[in-house]
Length: 140
Image (cartoon, rainbow, N blue to C red; front, side, top):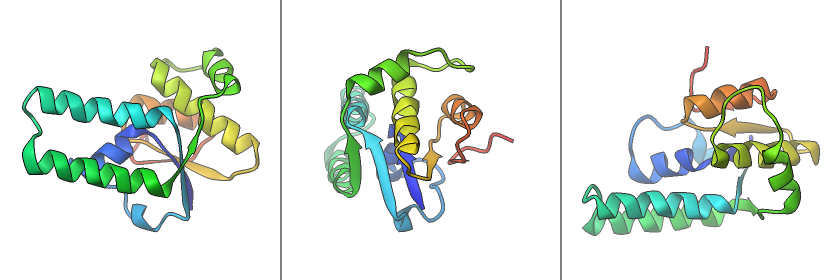
């Protein structure tokens, strides 16, 4: 399975926080936007600064994130991504979520038959309305 992943999927894996998407370690290929690199590290830094994550657990999370990032194909933040993310959508989405959705749409238009993975319900609903098969959140 070819999968587009947002930061919530990467973070849940490395922080072992909640149920993981079954079979994630067997995906054929994973794609994400370069900005996800910043997204995940900002969350880890926030958790460090608030005292929720430190020491060995923080080190393990960073190593885990680097491993996941190394296995993921990253799409650069290009002008076409920004323009697509700026367009009107049928659902309310946050800025970074719009960038994730735009990236997945562009990848799909390039011929990739991909599934959208997220643990964010709002993001999942928006992806589903755009025709993506969504995993990680039950939106039924």
